[in-house]
Length: 109
Length: 118
Image 1 (cartoon, rainbow over the protein chains, first blue to last red):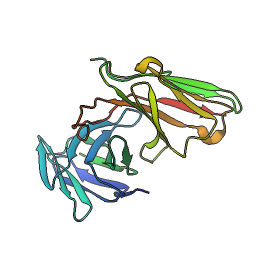
Image 2 (cartoon, rainbow over the protein chains, first blue to last red):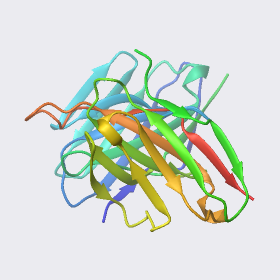
Image 3 (cartoon, helix red, strand yellow):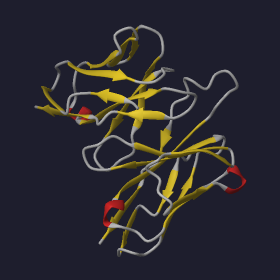
């Protein structure tokens, strides 16, 4: 089976940085994805890592260490609109993703 | 780009009734997925189609659940004899696979159908 762990909740101040960690134990590995999901809305794709290292996309960066089964999503210059659930997902085969339970980030003024 | 479209957005039904949901994927996407999500949890995989072929069904998908994708375009998910435990958000997603390059294709999700079984 798949085991994907991430913290349940995090709180940060507007303008600050937050790092959301994700650890995984899966039967295979063909990439790690991060999604953002606002309440009542669809998950939207943020980033993808398949090789070790850091991928940067504007205010969001994602890091992967395959040997440690570890990833993080870094959100910089937090804005109120970043308040959402952030989902870590692993593709262990050719197609489907297995998701963690999500981390709810609350940004305070 | 109209994105992934799901209908209806909300469905309230009584226990024991049958319900059917529809998903229209992004038009050029050949892969289609159904997931289920409950409050405070991530999406759980239910089933997957490559074009019109249903290639995988999760053990979560009991025999009361059936999904189809005729002609490899839209898909339907039917739940027969609904139970209160079926109450959840049902998400559809699609993606595009290229031979030898399927690994980095993200899933694009619709807004889901929220089912409430009373």
